[in-house]
Length: 202
Image (tube, rainbow, N blue to C red):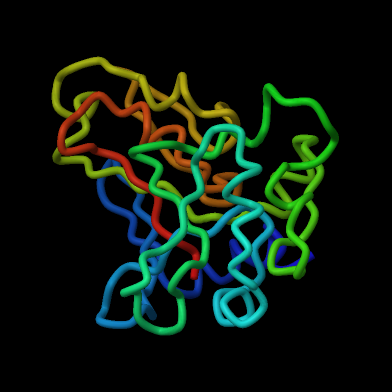
């Protein structure tokens, strides 16, 4: 089933967690060509190198996504990643197929190559097997950390209370062990530029 939630958390800790006063950020090391941030991959993805080698660029996952969150990477993308699926949560987040029929996440259900491993829609399977990335907060930009009360990200989080909690002034805290990187928080952030974004686990 690819990288499990527990394995991912261990790897996340290994690449670095920076704890500041009143703030937690999880750092992720980039291994993309040209030092670009690693792309966000669909739920159930194999580790990045295996994913790129296994994906056949059929775009069935892109077509199956009910929220149109998946798009092919441009043909100019280096490192053999051209035409592989990625997502940009600011434009469209992974809704974890919450409002759709069926027992499995749609993209994982249609993948013919095994680049995406089948993931059931129930909460525990999502927590264990979805590791798109981890949300990070820019505390200098977040309204709730700058004398305004917002809470939009918390209300959008499908795993609120686990992946994200809030304190006074609706200040959000990300809990990396439960954050699956769906991007609903990033999509909902009312700040421009946005104060929360998902970083890949690759």
